[in-house]
Length: 246
Ligand SMILES: [Zn+2]
Image (tube, rainbow, N blue to C red; front, side):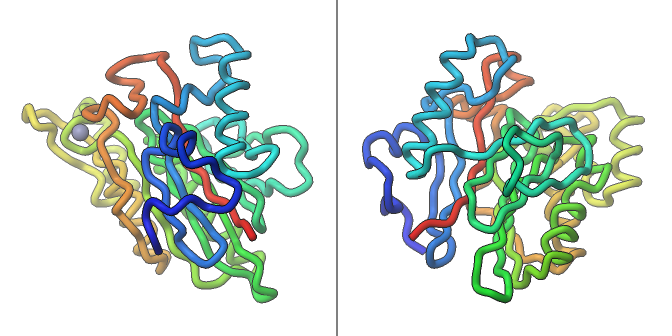
């Protein structure tokens, strides 16, 4: 539970550059969110593939592994296991029994879920919840899939996303999402209809009985050290990553 201590395998200076927030959340398990200075981690977001590969390699090095597992995100509710899948599976929740799993975002909500299997191995999930995924139930999918596999003692860390004071939407859309995910409706700082996606995620996790940690939250629209699709479309994606080690 110490902030600022490098996990095994990390290089201090590189980790400092790459991570926005990082914490050893349980013995042998670390959760982190990257930042702009860690580079764009998503292919097809306005940068050459070589650049993305080098940023991903640097992140893997800071995590202390050969490869971090990503998913092919589609704003749906599908959960997939990282183990055994060579390529990035089409999913919005990536589950593992210790392998590093990542979710890429730039305003959507990244959620990292951690628990334990009966054999003592960690249960991990990286979840992508934008407006559509939140309403589709991706948070429930991730928690249900981990629990069906036997995971217990789940806790969740919500990472940086656009906040309810900055995320303006048409009134009809706000009402539609509020009907599906109560507690999500908000008002922007300039007085127009908005959505508070992290509040919606929190209410869903509360309903599932999963304790929620909010200390990694920040607003991507206001914080230029994080990528924001609304503020600067096409600049890139940062990642939430959770992994087990030694
Ligand atoms: Zn904001």
